[in-house]
Image 1 (cartoon, rainbow, N blue to C red):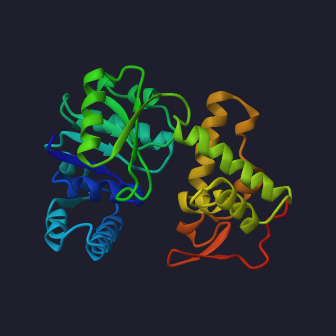
Image 2: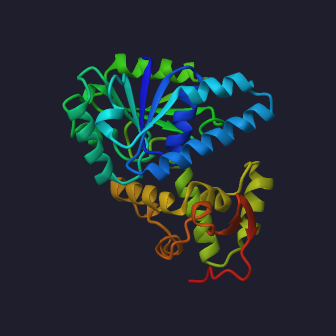
Length: 296
């Protein structure tokens, strides 16, 4: 595979485009919003500058990476010649199904369609296409240029050949792919989200405050980041969406989202992306919110 199309220019999409381009692939980043594409390219440039400053890459590596990336607001144009499409749109099942039906219509039959979904069934996504054997999950971790793991999710009909090709492609990106089967939350979020949800319940029930909960998990469990800070980093809306997928998929009340999380998302408090979640965020730096209203 030589040419990659990435659908969605948000945090995950621009990170995925960055990594593929850095390792020599020709990448088209596609989004309906030109402003989102421009912002994504600026983010990629800043992240490359950071890598150059740390001497992780050279200035010429930065130049070649940027030269490998093109932007397009039209899906039909951006998909031309693609060998692999990686969808990184919002974690919304209706949107993803719509995108994959469109990808299946536009792309040649041999093109592999991957989703960066963190929880939605690959089998369900594949069901709206005529190529379920060529639909697979590539769940990158945030921030994509830094994190090594890629969860490779096999749908019910994903072929061995496609799975091995995507595993090998992930290794060529200097990532560590882990093959998992298609059940709600896969592995990463099936384990992570209940922990985050329980941390939110611990706050909601007044057991301890934000910093206290995060400090216990950082110092007591050797986690590099506390669960509430991590939730802000992921996006509280994303956490809520994943928990709802787990709750619907398993029908087990242990996955029911904490009412505090629901209220915060409803109020627009989504973490770093909105500037406020469990912490206040200014230019990526966190500060504990003064007198937060985390009561029931």
